[in-house]
Length: 180
Ligand code: XMP
Image 1: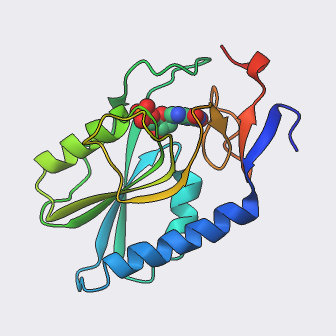
Image 2: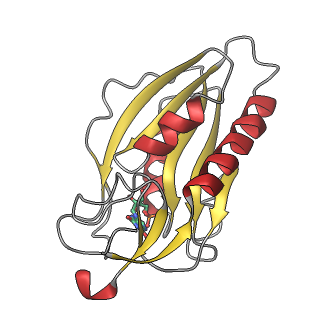
């Protein structure tokens, strides 16, 4: 294990198994849809989840990417999300699935959901790998959730601290002396 990680929260095997299950759940939900689906993935945290998940989705699909940044530099406190590359995304009349790494306070999803809704999708659902239950206000929900976790700052499998640790194959708890 990486020496900066205090504890592995979700192992590589458990992640892959659950992501495969989520793929089946999502494929089932969109099974009757001849036009397939459009995934809008939230960079950068969703990169690994997205790459693994779409390989378990057998239907026709498009992938669009938006960038949301919430934690500039060395902080674990969100300063409020900013959406930066939304202009190329075309979701009008499409069945859209937002894919994000974690539903924490919900401000990221709320921002992305609001932007996409304005663009007139036929349907809009959300899949997140992780959720910290009870933190997001009611009304900001995900249709597909991989794991519920404690309210701790986690890294790995795409999630970062100050740009690092995304490449860890598991989700782990960062040693507390390493962050502010
Ligand atoms: P909100 O609070 O907007 O958070 O729901 C969503 C975004 O914030 C990042 N985030 C985290 N990143 N460990 C991380 O590495 C965490 O525990 C964590 N909590 C929130 C993440 O980018 C997510 O998309």
